[in-house]
Image (cartoon, rainbow, N blue to C red; front, side, top):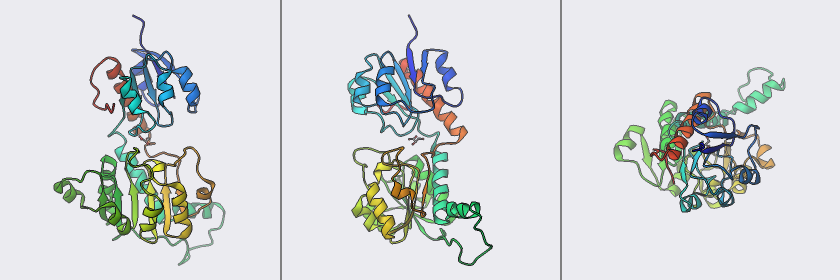
Length: 320
Ligand code: DGY
């Protein structure tokens, strides 16, 4: 029997590719950009398996164009780039890569919290521009974290890892999540549950760690942002359209929010010019999981998932 065909939409770090090449006929998309949906539709026609990235839109039209497709391994924990209902309808398995990116994403969340509250990027720009004129008692005054309230929305793996790190900064932690943690977990993390409305008015720094689902789309809109504490900071390393972007821009402009640290955007890779002009905002290019170790682990996990599905074995990371 000829080997099964697998489409890999981008070069990956580590051994993932060689794991697949040992077993399947691999069609690797070599250019360093995402395939358009049209290109993906053409390229996937003969594939039995797909290893794809969060930047690949695997919508119904792509699945319709892939009559042989049996398995999709997303190299990400989020699977909002894939039409899961359609995949289920067609009996196509879908997996993600949970766990391996938890620490990297939590660390980057803290990098954003510190960058935005301590004006790290503004300081860097000032020095590079040759404008550092010596120590000043009022130069780039930020805000302290000690004793402030960190509000975590979404207490999955990443939310919990972010909450755990808050201790090192002597912050109080409150959280909102679809499922409340067990009492013992709350005690270990030192985290108190609050309904979302209460959380919004309580947090000095609000950080989002939710999957993007129809229920979480624009969870934070005009009303919710208007409820936030005056001068609070918003951090988003989950998915961009969990926040209504124009509402966020409005809240930053009015000063309701003192700043934001963003790794994700509603229409990636587009970032609104109005956001790009704001100096109280730190903007990163969706690099929450971007450490060498983590990306290698994600790619290996995705390859392992794909192999398991195509060899009709159970994969622990099956989401559809
Ligand atoms: C994910 O895994 O969902 C991230 O957004 C990409 O690392």
